[in-house]
Image (cartoon, rainbow, N blue to C red; front, side, top):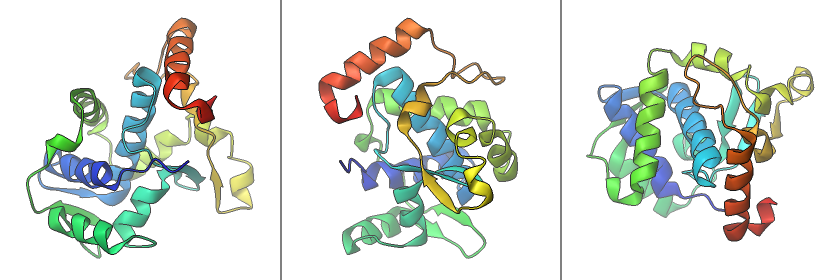
Length: 191
């Protein structure tokens, strides 16, 4: 089931670029989107972007969002929409060129993007990549990545608690079970 929402993905990149002062390194943006999707799934039963995640050597990555950034395997409609809001430079920088369309997000999604940005903005792209190697959804594939390039992440791994300095990814077993039960009413395929 493909649930990717390219408008939310573009606007998340745009929003993060604005929060970063108008431009953001694309790997940093991808890590912040992953953290936002992870947090939103754990607390609201779905990701923000609806993206598929893969474990790569530099950590988890939102696959469709990366394709959107690179202009790979995307439709003319997606490319046109991306180009209205973002400028992508050859030095891995994404710049905002038009104000964020907040209407694509729920208020919870905007809060999550803002919370994640405020909690992790002090890290550069390499520090976020290194941090991502401690999360269960990357650790699960660490050994395989020594010989392979990428592995599709089972999003169930996003539900495993991870204790870092933010404490954002610590939920009780009851909270996780409630979210999974709530999620199953909308996405039976996740169960």
